[in-house]
Amino acid sequence: MEQLTPLINALKRYWKADLRRLTFLAALVMALVTARTTSGPRLALSLGSIASPDPRSAYRRFQRFLAWPGLDGEGYARFIFALLRPQGLLLVMDRTEWELGKSKVNLLMLAFLYQGLAVPLFWSFLPHDGNSSTPERIALMERALAFLRAHFPHLRVEGFLADREFIGEAWFRYLEEKGIPRCIRIKANTRMWRLGSGPRAWELFASLKVGESRVPRRRYWVYGRRMWVVGLRLGVREWLIVATQNLHLFTAGMSMLGDHLKRATGFPSYEGCHETSSPIPTLDHPGPHANPPPAGILEGPVVPFPHRSRQG
Image (tube, rainbow, N blue to C red):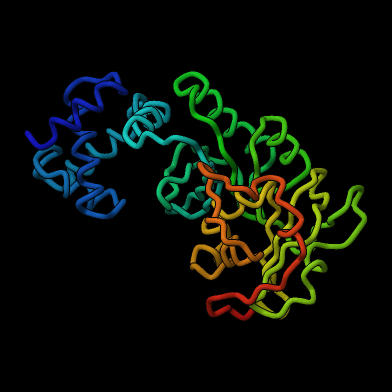
């Protein structure tokens, strides 16, 4: 019990609850760390005497605690920010869908990147199967922005990362109006000019061999916004193509985009796209080639991919 005291004292600042609930919450946090599982029955057993010596009673108490209305997202977000103290926010949006018994769960998640990990920030349960809509994404983003204005006005959103689901002219326009730089993977058949004309994204990289990448010489219109487009050929008929507002944001977020990038089989580094002795830019130190980069970067070199590539 004494080992939970520091955590209980920290939780008091962000949740208005009695000592009994705060103790249970602190024990649950410790159980998640030590048990390394999110299975309810296993966590209930890990809670030990805090819940109940009887496994069934412990699990029932665990379920009642999760139904507690005071376990709100804003309290969690305030606690996470106070604990991690991020200096800037690189937001990541994703969606996951699974079945829980006979019920389907469709969860839209907004997280922020911290030391290579995506830390959940806000989420919403979608009342339907399949992809999220633009209004649903906007509603979730507005929750996060309102929270930041109210509690952490000094924090700046440095960028937004997402996969191919999170595209569309209305969504890109919303992000631009909010001043949020974006780096989003797009579909290979996306048109690169305004009014639906012009080449498709894959045609910009059709001459590449598998494992090669290229930065085109100029920006293209992507869903009504001018953006840099970076492409990597993954297989005979498979590409990984990212539209980004600036190239240093692409570098900061490339390891988070797409299944191929998550397996460390994505693009080469920003330095690999041109000849330079400058250090790789970051969000804190964008370097001399930050938005917009000089012409030397945009000569469209073919860059051999340094890792073993996957065939399509």
